[in-house]
Length: 120
Image 1 (cartoon, rainbow, N blue to C red):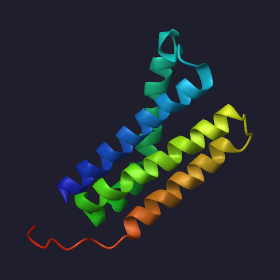
Image 2 (image 1 turned 90 degrees about the vertical axis):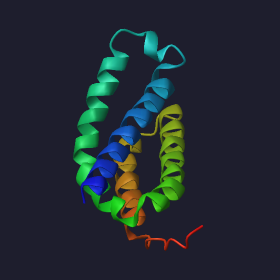
Image 3 (image 1 turned 180 degrees about the vertical axis):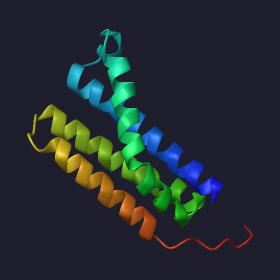
């Protein structure tokens, strides 16, 4: 149980921080981290978002680390592509739809049956 909680919290924080940096790069260009307030704001906002998503990420971690190693990078790529397209085209609903897409992705991860370990 403790490992599942740690895995879920780590997954939530890692996704939030890296996707926040992707958003900063898409919104402010290649000099995003040299601007004075971008990096601290990205860290604080992403950490707050990861706290909100932590319970759902902990629930999604019940599928096991092996499933998460396979399917969570796919979810991250989908979310990063959504950020890149939404920010670059300045779509007005991109932030709300990112939230919905994130929740749906975590629910799908949580509903994937746990893989059986066959000793290999």
